[in-house]
Length: 464
Image (cartoon, rainbow, N blue to C red; front, side):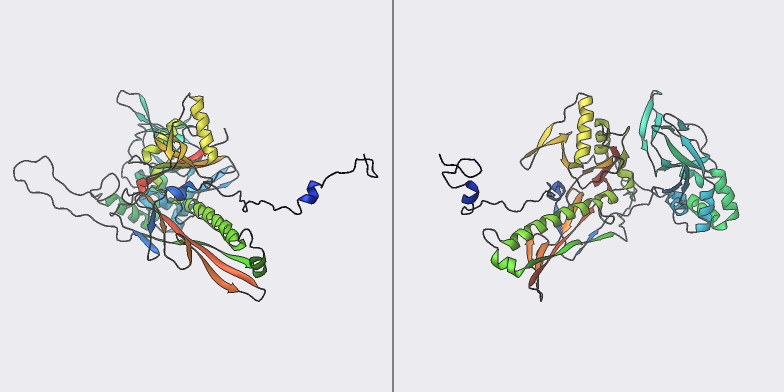
């Protein structure tokens, strides 16, 4: 046996490293880790918006003024932003910033711990409660004097505001007991009266609010349609009409764009076995679709997280998403909910809570995939729903489709150089450096046709 100079035996055949210089390499297309299932884009029914603008016509709704209040914090001191007091129904539309600042300055801070009573049922409503931080359980009396839970309030909520304009204070119809530690600001009713005595504009505004005819409205704030039923004989039937919103909301299509650049030399010489331009375009389109889903969730103008009605937002009872919490969420969209969307970590947290109770959620077939479900509604992952640094997230439930008066996606098909529905790749030319440019554009938006089509479970803790 021959050996090489280093003592190792001499090779008797061609080495693999040398042989592969003559071999054909089998390659994969370029892989991209950030591609997700994008369930939101798949479950939304897409509506063609030929004019670039989608108008949602609704019945005229009486504004109830149930907005959320925001605060500022300096160390342990919490203060309400004066302009945010306009979210209280009696102060809605009041524009005197100086008077609002005086009212904000009269608020009294109260810190509380877990299981403390902040408001006692039956006591006089002598202040407005503005919740800056923490969670409180709203409790009432049941039919047989047992305690019943009426909901959970959290930061930004407020109670007792209607008593600002009342001539005589009423009594609290419920008890507020804290679930966690937190802070509330109390705006005394007497302070509002004293401020109004010195500010004629506020006094007139409150008097106008107090004297407004409530009108006839249904539970959703819409003007009631007068009907007669169960009558006999020939009574005079009521006359009625359906009033429309004179300023309906309009959604303009948003756009996500980029300029794809490929050198002509690369496109000419390196197109075998895979077309370089096609692969570059394929991955660029994937990135645009991921951004499209992100915008549909998070955009402050039309994103689902920011367009859910305030009355459609509920809070967890403890922190992690429990089966009780998801039942409460489904109750916000009780008319044929189609899908629940949650961050994968929120779905895992819900699974842990089910396991702790010995429950095992079922599964449903969703376009060939077996996905978890709760009460028959599929629970789909969406990593575009953010998880905060504190480990909290949100869970969405939706009814979808135009006929169901649900949530719909908006797009415009048939645009020039379209390569996918509402997505185009338009040739922009070749510059003096021989670089080919393509403008890649995706047009989209989303609309919630009626408020009860979308519900959100907020402040879901996923870190337990």
